[in-house]
Length: 270
Ligand code: PTJ
Image 1 (cartoon, rainbow, N blue to C red):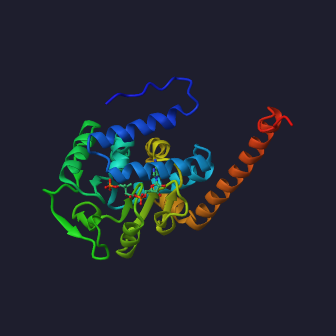
Image 2 (cartoon, rainbow, N blue to C red):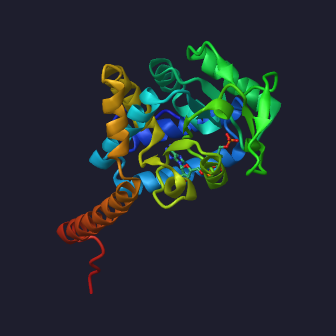
Image 3 (cartoon, protein in one colour):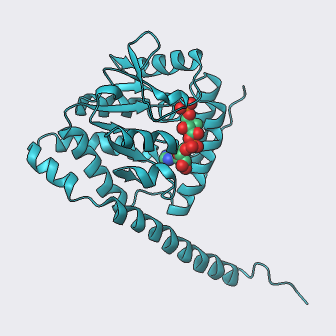
């Protein structure tokens, strides 16, 4: 497969490099074919929020890290897209928060499970839960492949981080009493709406930042961490994220009109 050379000064360099990672992940069976489409949807929403981490997302990340650090049994669920984009950050966050990584796939194929496990081990993971040779149980509320979870992982967890999810499982995890954290660029997705903490940001920016925050926040006493989680309001968080998109779009419209006026684009000679 011929790789494209992305010029260092290309204005969309980061976005194109991230796209290459997803394509590579697809070629090595880490990413499902549907994962390519899910990534495209994420790209579109990232464009709408201005391809940056907002202050609001930073607050949501803080609350999420506080929840992971203060949990009795936190777990990080890993799918193909998350593994292809941020394997090292997943391992780092897992280690700092003592939250095991569990592979949990919507489009299950044994070769995908093996490829994801190998990629996580290459990134430094010592233990990977959720593989077929491990004891499993079913989430009764769910009919998809994601029903099957590791008994020592999501099965026993009180707090679960589920990045880039489909909505059904978030609802099912909530129905069995888990505290659910998600990372989803779409503030209107069912996952975003049903989670306890929704980080509306690109996983490529959010996960490394959360690992960084976890190194600092692990020194905070547990009761203060609980307080950070309790004072976080996810309804306000989601509403603010939608308003940020609206404001960003209004600014973009102004910029576009100004640019076209200045450069005379679209002014035809009559
Ligand atoms: O690896 P599998 O088999 O478990 O499948 C994983 C996918 C992602 C294909 C599966 O969970 C799926 O179909 O998900 P959805 O329903 O398409 O939802 C994915 C959500 O993630 C959408 O709301 C996207 O906007 C969002 N998203 C995509 N890329 C990113 C993202 N959010 C944050 N960062 C991204 N890079």
